Picture (cartoon, one colour):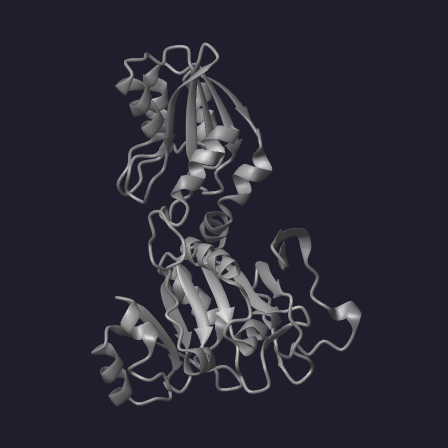
Length: 359
């Protein structure tokens, strides 16, 4: 199952809106077939593992299949049921990591296999197999994308100096880690102030392998983004989430640049409502989004209870109280009201530290 997990992660950032899945066929104590889901619309992991065994001329009669996610039992938009292929392959045993939360599959895939006389064991490395698909799991159940809030700050929690200078707080290695997060996400969300102050490209550049660029989403209630902004020039598609106040003239100008204008009813403060934005992105099939900033945008998502996971990078620097805090005002009046983080993981690279955890 560990090998199947390793294979599944090779599809990271490429399978959305489908899950990452890895599969391994074992016969006589030896691995005879390996496969993983490479991208949406391509053969599922089980089929890839069967094809791998077939290339070697190996029959799978009596073999055991290890798969990280419950095999599907329904016909998708582009793929047939994997349970039928498993039954036809001669596989006698199936070991499943996690049950698929998709109501069309959940428990039904296992039941279908057993109906065909195949022995099934579930729950092997279940936590690990579930965690790799946290984007897919939330979206398939709620229709909303999984939200990661990423911040890079000094050790005293500042993302910029009093003058607004923020380049570069972290090292190249830290930025590579951040680009890996972008690679996983369907969209990267920032506020207009980040665009105006830093002019980021919001693309994936510092990691190798197959890269599917995330869609940049700019929260810009007054449509202040300049046409020459790097983010508009870098991506073939971008979304500017705004309110219904700016006129149609501005909308036409940005559409000519290839940007999509998403108009939403403003919230009580006149800003783009984060919850409504997530609903729109989820309805479009986006399973996971990365919120990169700035401090007001991060605070907005936290205040509304929209963040699922935080990833904070700390550089060995101190700016002081006149710097810009990594998270804006949350209105918390006591420590008891503080937002709690659980399942903390800490990684260190050089003198920098990364802390991740779940709300």
